[in-house]
Image 1 (cartoon, rainbow, N blue to C red):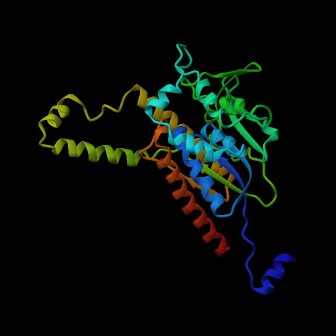
Image 2: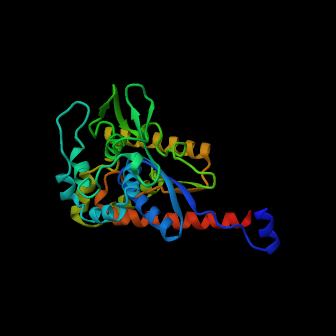
Image 3: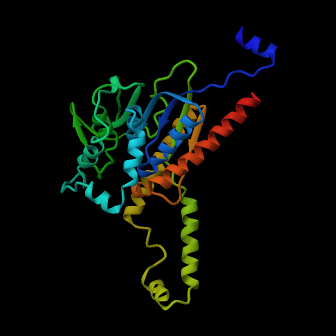
Length: 304
């Protein structure tokens, strides 16, 4: 009846503004989620629920607790020195960082609460290393859920709980579009920062290599002899890139399965998972990509 009335009066359907938001894993690249949320709010969208994995679980949880602005300001003060101060190294066979110090620092301005007391529905995703199954947190301590979700394998200390060994949720569901709580008219929106633009990275490395080879500087010529072009190809880069490719593929498959109304797909060539000291640049990328995605969605909606 309402749609018929709109057609008779020559008016378009009211734009849908309620959003069920899903934020992916991606390490420091996940700081782009802040820019995405800021743009949504500026454009009048209403985030009715939120789900996240790894860094997406952290940003989503901080937002749900109403402390995103404070978190952004805090991140501005993170440089390489501060990163080292927040890194509690540990001698262990299954991790190199405890991961408690960073959580404690954030809890100084984002008090821990039970997830069910948050003003909007929230969930975080982790992985049980024992069974290989996805573990979904919808109740209990917000920061216990976040800490489990960000447990990057071999880097952060796993979280042991109820017979499970919990590691990063990105292992099984890097963009949990199927886990966010939705209402009837909510738009399903995902922000995916899992991917790295390896082709662009290789192009940049090639350009740098060519400039190095053509340089007439004596120091550069010495470096050309000492440092091979393929120095980045080693055991570490082999493992990390392989892991990244698998996570990216899982994210793409989830997006195809759930077909979100809006997908902000952010592949980065310059920034990696540990570039936490570059928060403002990453936030700016999130803003830029989200503006483009919303514009594309609006154009497609008008043509329907």
